[in-house]
Image (cartoon, rainbow, N blue to C red; front, side, top):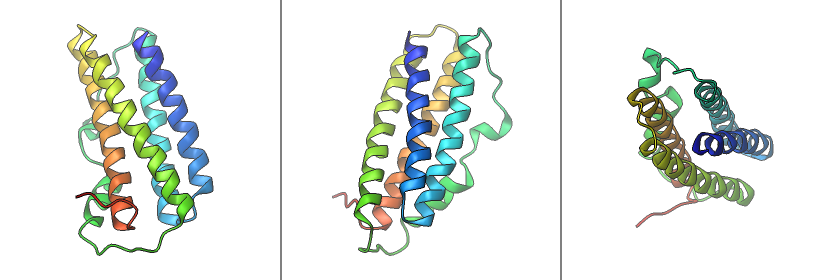
Length: 149
């Protein structure tokens, strides 16, 4: 049942990232959301494989941080811009909240599997969800949308 929940979470993420990419005003944000929609589709494909009784193989590239995430991580070293579109800020806030929820749900699912290979796959997906959240956070921080203490 937890995998069915994760499947529906991934479907929602794909739909929202695609919709939000079309609504975003900033080209950089459009690209970020488009990239994350593709990664969420990979997650959905992986969940479907598990549901079909297969243990997905981790490719060598899956353990590495994507170039987009590295770019996002480097952005926080740049100066902050206070000029941003309010709708873009709302879209980011919603997707950051969604990524926090989905990552937490993966945490629960990981603990419910005995098979270490499945746990590893789910852990990998959770890590990518956390990276999505980090990328959104960094975008928001760079654009003055999020100012942590």
